[in-house]
Amino acid sequence: MAALLVSMPQRRGRWPLPARRARQTGRAGANGAPARTRARSQPVRVANARSDLHTWSVRWIDISVPVRDGMIHWPGDPPVCVEQTASLEKGDPAELRRLTLGSHSGTHVDAPTHFVEGGESLDQMPLDATCGPARVVRIDSPKAVTPDDLAAVGLEPGERLLLRTRNSEVRWYERPFREDFVHLTVAAALWLAERRPRAVGVDYLSVGGFAGDADGPKVHRALLSAGVWIIEGLYLGHVEPGRYELVCLPLRVERGDGAPARAAVRTLQA
Ligand SMILES: [Zn+2]
Image 1 (tube, rainbow, N blue to C red):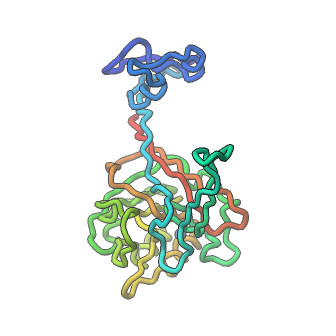
Image 2: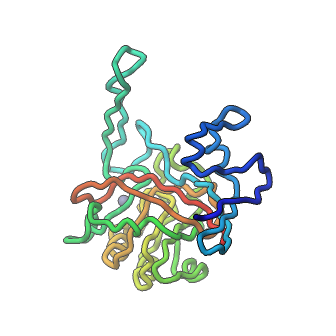
Image 3: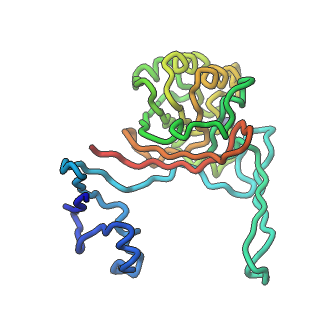
């Protein structure tokens, strides 16, 4: 049985309790909040069955954007509508909303079949494509991500790479669509395709550009035909560059070309 214990800076009693025990005791924090939520951001030292120690933080950072009525969407895609169809306040027995949106709304995953005929669809997606160790890197180029930018941050085989660009300097998801968002150049997409990361995540609605001579379809095709899964619509303004564990799970849409996803990263400190 693993010994669970710690040195925690603000230790109040023996936190954290294993989740099951915490539930059983119903122990609450000083402010009445459930104990488990208070323990969440505390570094915890753990000895596993082999008695070797490692430390990690249990703080999850949400990197997906909120889905709301009328939110930003790719020009020409269906608008995002969140319509309340039943209301407790109005006497209905439950709250209910109707969601109408395109498959590439907000934070979402692109499946190969989005641009590659016969490519995998979302229901065929291996879950480890977008869940597992990942690295957030900062790209400062003001207009587009180039092969030089990527070479500067390097790439390890099979890596999940999340690109934080100037798009994340503002909460872009609360603003109107802008045509000049930072995107991958075709050359950058080909650079990646050659090295085959497991997944690439970007902080706007598309990996490919919109304006000028940007060739969005070509960028998508280069990545998706090389087996690189794409996460689009992330917000990374509150995430420092570094190594994380990523969880990003799109809806399991049959034959899906894309679907909204909740995405989060957790710091890993070995
Ligand atoms: Zn997409």
